[in-house]
Image (cartoon, rainbow, N blue to C red):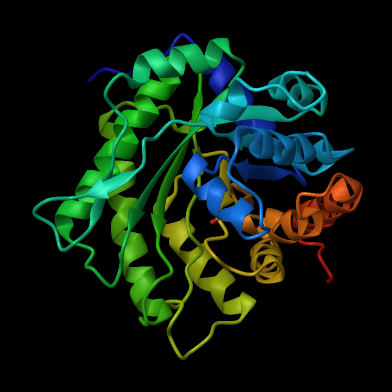
Length: 337
Ligand code: 13P
């Protein structure tokens, strides 16, 4: 039996702890150019590098953001980009006491032999990319793969998702990057909350089996799960208390306490819903830091408020700070609406 000793072990543990610090969570701002294009289109802007730069400058330089946000996930373009004032985006984050992270997966493609499911690409050449990203200032990474309930999930799709995440996690740790392990169980479908719970148990069992097989250091990873909710088209809706009960039960059954942080995705929940659900999960002490890694649930109002107009930058930053602060309070279990 071998136990892998990454030369970065101490640093990985320190980085993970810094991100999983009380009252703080992650700002996911790593939309691919295609997804960022959709967001910009929704406010009538063209998907140009200049518009992406202007928007991301607004986000990273919101005053005091680091009081609520401990890490920011960037798309590769942003990791190498400067703000509109000519400062490295990465430097602005570090000055705000926010750890820069990087999305390293190469997106989803159809998985032949499955039930119209997908798998996540990006392992080829990953170790050279993670080494370069570390040089550029990134200290954590994200790999998002998905599992679809209406399309299965097939045993093949779950195994592929879990194995890919584990290989990515081992490679990232070898380069000094804390891997965020994200098997997103998509909200789509009309299934009830019990079915989501059943699938989530299966997915997380396999993910941890392969993480262990790949000798990943559990103290140096972060998780990004979906909350356990009914499918988006299910006629029964769940209260924050129900979501919290199911989700915490899942975590207790499947996630070792060695893992420092559980950073939930918002997955299409409204801004307030995502905050209320997180708050409900933090009403009593948990073995892990239970927090957020939201994209849409932090950015939606901010993006709309900005609308691409320079005179709205301040108001848009204020809108971002309102959501960041609300989720910070929810991480502490103190959000009151
Ligand atoms: P949402 O919070 O919008 O689901 O995005 C989080 C994310 O980064 C998904 O990978």
